[in-house]
Length: 189
Image (cartoon, rainbow, N blue to C red; front, side):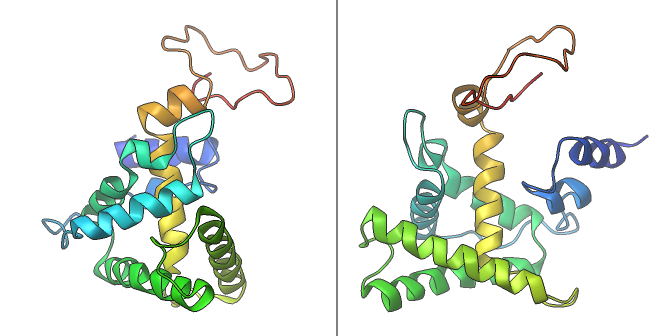
């Protein structure tokens, strides 16, 4: 079995349909290139704020603390097709325009509550888009941003060890560990 097959099977077993399924099932699609264009420092800072709105700092660190903007930049540049790179980078402007339309100010100038309300609207919009999306239709920019935020955060050391329950060296597999309502999900088992 090659690495791609192994990753596909592990991804399917672990529920990759929720977070980054396309990445797990197809790997980097941009492997024939040396990477796409870099996002600007301002764009990366903007994506840090988008990520922090999706996964805010609470009793655990938020997405901004793991450098989610830089992670998104790397993934888009190295793994996305030219078409999805364009959708993603244009999506940064579309998200800011949506904020100006809804809140009469840019996303970065909006309050945390306004940012959350806007991203909730965009999430509902992308869900409705995918209900009628045909295979040849392009991806929705907000879905790409949200997937990368979740993938980057929960595969980071902080997400895996401070947000999820984690055992550094688990020993043997025990599929019947006790769980109480409100416990964190497991990063390892």
